[in-house]
Length: 267
Image 1: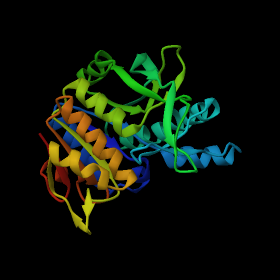
Image 2: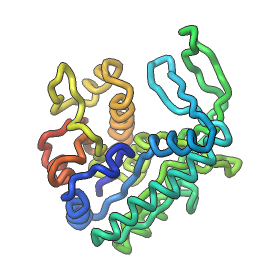
Image 3: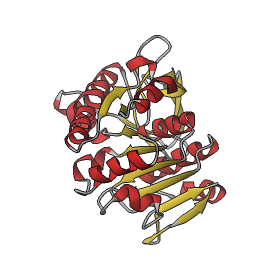
Image 4: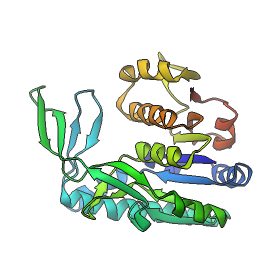
């Protein structure tokens, strides 16, 4: 089984061969699970509603969205609604019996709400702030996912989790995908992006061991760094290998599985 994370920046820009390729992958690999992003849509909608987004940086340099209550509501509306259903519609049109879910549905993704966040403030100093409505996934309802897969359905999951007090929680899409992959015992996790993989000195990094990925992580840019963090977590959780590949090339899933023109991280 394969878990695929589709970045929000490439949802509307996938190669025309992508959906037929996803269908073949689902048939040949015992099913697949899709987790998606959509951060740019969240930012656009939030701004249009007059709620300016706020971004924070952790001491390790990882940038993320600060999620207050109103942002959590907007995040859920966009991710579980607009983005999720657009992907499901496209997959259905391509002959894939996709089912759109968020982590709220069936308690699919349960998370602990972060009480405090340590950030680097405008004065370049460490500062602890209220955690807002951001969560760390603690449980994945694999029974629900397996029930869908057994009926030849393809789950499409929006990264909104359910908190202990039944609140909406924003969870990072890449790390949500790694949690799903690990919980499901996936053979592979594939991060579909708008680039071929990790680039260093303008060259594609084709292979990394888990240890090499840990060492390289701080040297990688913010967007790709999250995918490397998620890859490391997936491998530590028992997933066989992590692949980072472009969705703009022909047959992107098949090419990545064949280790053609992508980054492969393995144990």
